[in-house]
Length: 336
Ligand code: TXA
Ligand code: MG
Image (cartoon, rainbow, N blue to C red; front, side, top):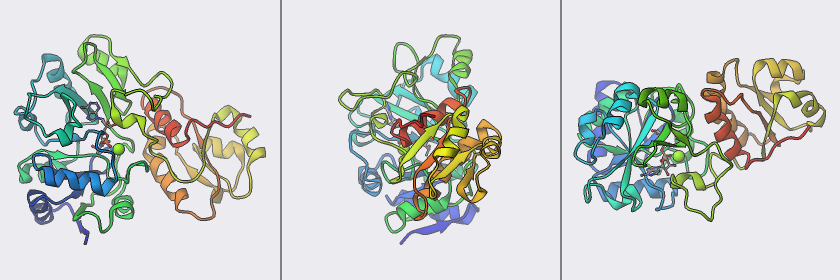
């Protein structure tokens, strides 16, 4: 049975008791919801892989409430310290070399590095502090599905499979954190997110490589972020991306049950019934916050056929939006 917890002190204590007992509890962050389990307890970590249906070679993020909680596991370089000071709590996951033997192979997937994240959500930081251990924190979706941005999404995927869900309402950012590899000779972005390449370069004062800006990773090579090789964030429905310059062509090509996710200005130009649309709002931030919710909505809507989603300008968080959209669409594009 899966219990829904609120974010008051009493409920957080109950949820942390479950974590300490080796159970799996989903938790809110500012990006997406995560699946929490005691990262120092292999039996608990195994339950996370089972609940998600996640391949064992895909390593997990360790989620902490304070920097002091990760000092036992990794050596923190000056550069990494700068990032922690500037971006934590926040939407940046930092990969660091582990101190041999300190982190379970189940968490690292056998790598010599581990990913750390300190999310900007007070309830979750309280939960982790009370549990007294770092928790693993993959996104709380079934493997391959869009990440959950509400507790209801988590319930949809995980009901009956995990012990609890801490509900703190919809998440703010809507896509997963930026992953930066600080164990590499040159800092490298393995997954784009709310913290941008420019922001990282400014903070570090050195060049940062964006490993995701080239074309998608083929499945026969080993990508640096093992998770990025799987078909991801993908609804069962056919998803196709489109450029706003092609909006009028798309309008003519639309079939009766096709649906469109686009910014308000684009929807206005296309003059299609609002019932056939999911608004991506007016800003890049609005669009990113709404992406997974819209995909999940239409995936469960028996009426909806193909889901057309507008691409965003590749600036700021627009890069993260387009990255997740391209994965959901399997790179399919509408050609006007
Ligand atoms: O925003 C987020 O980061 C969310 C919230 C819940 O915190 N979590 C999340 O976790 O997205 P997950 O497990 O779904 O994605 C983590 C990504 C995966 O692509 C994984 O392969 C990669 O980070 N990763 C984890 N540890 C790594 C490591 N040591 N080296 C390279 N990539 C790693
Ligand atoms: Mg994930």
